[in-house]
Image (tube, rainbow, N blue to C red):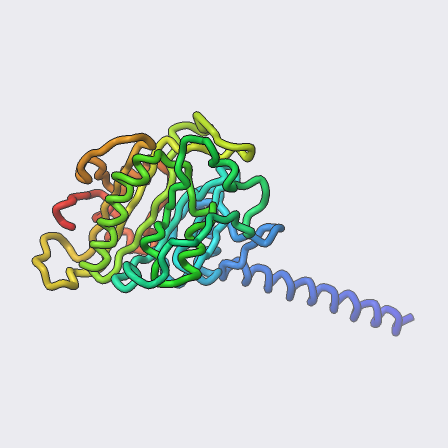
Length: 294
């Protein structure tokens, strides 16, 4: 009887120790940002734990960190996207644009728009845009991805697209994209985040069989960390940030008329940009926006 009791005690002890071990491993996994949904997708929900998910999954530069929203994080060759399944759109797209990435041999000619196999159905596809009256508007533009064939192909995925006014896409929005490339050359590198804006919890319009949400507008925020690399006169601080907002409609106005502070863009979107900065620096640079400093 004594031997049987001892045997049962050893079994129970072994089970308890095994459960304790796996519990510890699970806690350690969450601590290092390995929190994954049942489908295997890393998601952000605005919490500190979600912040660690993104960093822990291999995004080396925390200046690309965006906090907020329920998104599936997609890591592409030249950018990171927070994809909003309900919208069929990216909630945000972030990338580090260096001077060397502003040019290259891999042009957009011959590259086709493609569905993204990393996201579930229903999702945006070419047929949704046919006869919709909207362009397939890049968030991370083709012109920022000429340095790599894979980067160029990635930026034509529909998880990097939003329905965008044709004149905006080829006009004022394009002007800002070119201005960002100028800044990347001037300062060596800049950090960019952009995405759609919705004024209400539901869209005023959708397109296609997959009901892709049509944004009311678009934001873009830009951060620089360096002095001018072209030895030009530096007007503002080395570290500076600026925001822009565009209604999703035709228009042709000076760049200065679209300027907003990053704080204002954060209030508009509910997102937190550049949270890898110290709180003091983030508060200082996100409260001000002066195009003359750029």
